[in-house]
Length: 317
Ligand SMILES: [Zn+2]
Picture 1 (cartoon, helix red, strand yellow):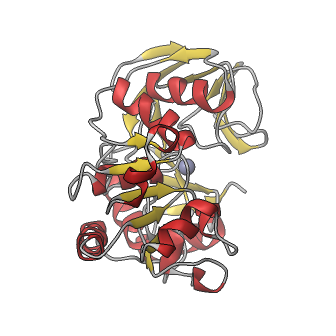
Picture 2 (cartoon, protein in one colour):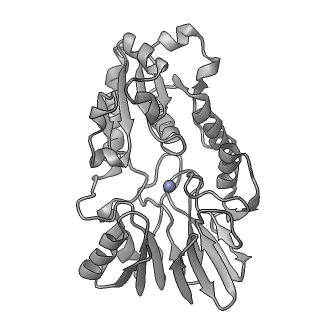
Picture 3 (cartoon, protein in one colour):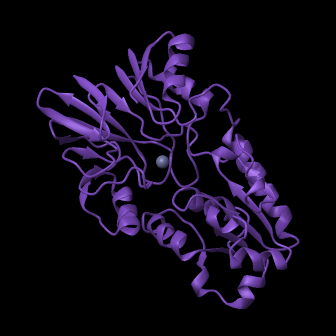
C-alpha cells in the first residue's frame, strides 16, 4: 500500500489506484465535495456533489454513489460517509483507510455531521490544524448570528455574506429560523435550488425577481464576500442608505479581522471545518495506527498528533 500526494492524494495497492480530490480530471478520481478547489469531471462523487458541479462548472460528468453504500471502484471497495462540511460532502472509506476530505464533526443546518470511525490509516485535512485555531462550539456562534440578525431586523434590512457555495446556503438556512423574507443573488440561488431539489427546505427569493419595494422592506440579504469589499456593491450601498447592517461569516473571522478592507458591522467565526480541538478529538476517536495530514497546517497537525496523542503521524504535503 502506498499513499502519497501528487495530483491529489493517491492510494495505490498493487496495480489499483484511486486519486482523492485531484487538482484536475484523472483516472480513478474521487471528489469529496463541490468547492472549486476539489471539483474534477468524471470522478466518483455523491449525487448532491454531482448536481452542484453541474451548476458550478456546467458538467455532471461522473459516477455517483450515495452515502453509506459500498461500490467497487478501481479495485477498491468505496463507502462515502457524511463529512458535515457542506451539502453533499463526503469522507471516503477505502477498506481500513479513511480520508476525511474537508470535514466538520459539528455539521450544519444544510448537511449532517462527520462521525469518527475506527480505521487503520486516517488521512485527515488540516485547515485549522494549529494549536490556537479554536472557535468554541458552533452552536454558540449560530446563536450569536441569529440574535444579532433578529435585533438588527427591528430597525432595517440586514446583509450577510459568506462563500458562494456552502456558507451562503447555510446562512439562508440559519436566517430562515428568523424570517422567510430572505433575498439572495442569482448565483447563490442557482446553487440553493439544488439543495431544495434534494429536500433541504430553504426559503429565499432571487434578487432578479424581487420588486424595488421588496428591496426596501426589512429583509435579510445573503450575498458574496466580494459585495462587502470597499467600495461595496450597489446592492449593499442601497441597503446602507436604508440603515441596513452588514456581517461576514467565516471560520477565518476567528483568526483575522476583516473590518479593515470590508464594510462589516459584525464578523462571525462560522466554520465548516473542524477547528484544532475538534481535529484532535476526532483523530483520537478514530483510534488509527497511523495519521497522514494534508491541506493547510499539515506539518503542525502531524507534530501535535505525535506529541499529544502518541500516534505515528506525518504530513503528506
Ligand atoms: Zn471545502
